Amino acid sequence: MLIYAVKRLAYMLPVAVGVSIVCFLLVHIAPGDPLTAVLPSDASAELQAQMRAVYGFDRPLPVQYGLWAWRVLHGDFGASIATGRPVAGELANAVVNSLILAAVATLIGFFFGTLFGVVAGYFRGSLIDRLCSTLSVLGVSVPHYWLGMVLVIIFSVELGWLPATGGGPGGSAGRSFDWAYLQYLLLPAITMSVIPMGIVARTLRALVGDILNQEFISALGAKGLDHAGIFRHVVKNAAPTAFAVMGLQLGYLLGGSILIETVFAWPGTGFLLNAAIFQRDLPLLQGTILVLALFFVGVNLMVDIVQTAVDPRMQRA
Amino acid sequence: MTAATAADIPVAAIARSPGYWSGVIRRLARDPVAMVALAVIVGLVLMAILAPYLAPNDPAKGMMLRRLKPVGFPGFPLGTDELGRDMLSRLIHGARLSLLMGVTPVPIAFVIGAAIGITAGYVGGLTNTLIMRTVDVFYAFPSVLLAVALSGALGAGLTNALVSLTLVFVPPIARVAESVTTQVRNLDYVDAARASGAPAFTIVRVHVLGNVLGPVFVYATSLVSVSMILASGLSFLGLGVRPPEPEWGLMLNTLRTAIYTQPLVAALPGVMIFITSIAFNMFSDGLRGAMDVKS
Image (cartoon, rainbow over all chains, first blue to last red; front, side, top):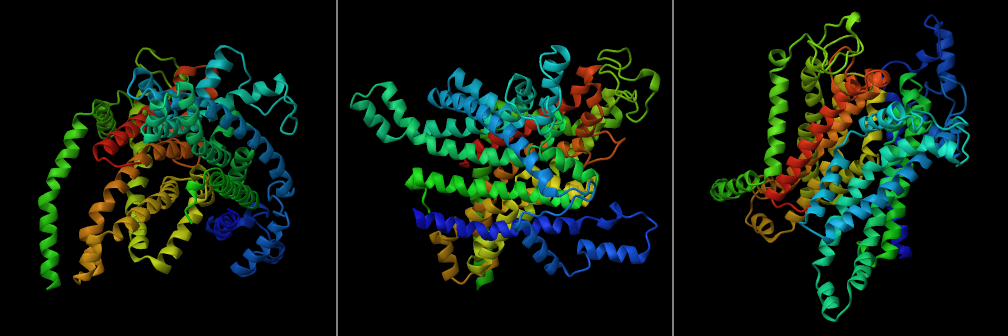
């Protein structure tokens, strides 16, 4: 098992390096000179060269990458071009906000997804199966940013129950986990939970159906085990996959939250990314994307290792 | 000699294939959900093509005096937008850019991804490792993040959005193509063809493509719905089509402030995206069943 974990880690490292190279190169595929954002348009050639040296843009690309990677490894993502503040500080707060949103959304989605998926898998072909399957198709097909708008229209504009946008009464850094805070979290989290709900429901429906068709289930039934006992066996067999899907969804939601965070003005990474793009703040863009992508890579690795530890059948290598 | 054998084999393959494809079509035609989905897709495409004839008004002509009129306003059955432009006409015209942006990346990514995946899977060895590790790097990004990162770096615009979305879908398609190709490559009849002296290109064309393209195609169709949502999402963020072009995602963005005054009108463009996305998802599900491909 340990050997397997080390193997997976060794396999992930090159991917992580590759991810960092892609993030680094993002700045260089961007059209235009990154300095135009900081310098006045009539800056002298001398000043331009000076600033170029300050940001290190005058070095060859591999050297620039090496220096950048070295600094990033030490937690230094450079300074935001727009605000001049260190990117790392802006990121830390935003990542926490995004993580809270993504984690709550994953939990809600996982709960309902499991419920619908297991029920549909148990009663394959029944009316309730078709209802659950339809719900999960709707869940994966809905443009979630639009669903967010619709929920705002219903619960904020028409009913006035919940606030439409914002990150809580304390602003972007104030988190207190009381109702005053949670009511800001509720709508974006529900909107976001629709994605994992659909995917978890689909996966579990297929999984539970497959497990019920296996011989050991008939054997359990033949030896006289009651429904609850058989159900326990089904749960035991389905759980590793279900939790793996849940873990992957958490990583995916954190990386893909930009649209929902924009709709709800949630002060997370997506909001930061949006600002970085429109202010052409390339260090901020680079840092945010790198952190989100590496988080996704890390979650994938952890899911892989944990899943194999729980279920040795998964061990492929 | 090889040329003669190579010419013989496809004849046999073609003689067998009509049975399979007519079976697929027959099964698909018997699936009411898939047929309804197909009808919706055809309807949307027709709407896009015939937009200038169907739209009652000019989608670009606005008037400040008739801004944000409700659904059912005389002369404007679906109301007007924040610049007083006819919503119905804009939704009809919006199908053009929205479908173009949402659908095109997938077939392009299908061709590129399948080529990469089949090459990696068939050649194997070091080539496979190099190609697939590179694909893994791009696969390591959540799709929304990669699309936003690429189009954010490239800058807003239709072409850049199309390029970004295509790049997002190449890695997953390449992975599916690679894994199916690797399975097929190790089958006995491919060994037999190689032993009989058939060149690599012929083996791929005759034995591999027919077995690989089906599952990869089904997988690709399931991505169209994702692509629609992502494409409109990019426009929603201001990274896709630029105003004043009618595009559903962009319309949703510009109407966001109208949720307090005309909520129904503001939500309409999203309904179009939703319908399109469901239709492609359901058709893809039907196709998967009809072609008997395991997910």
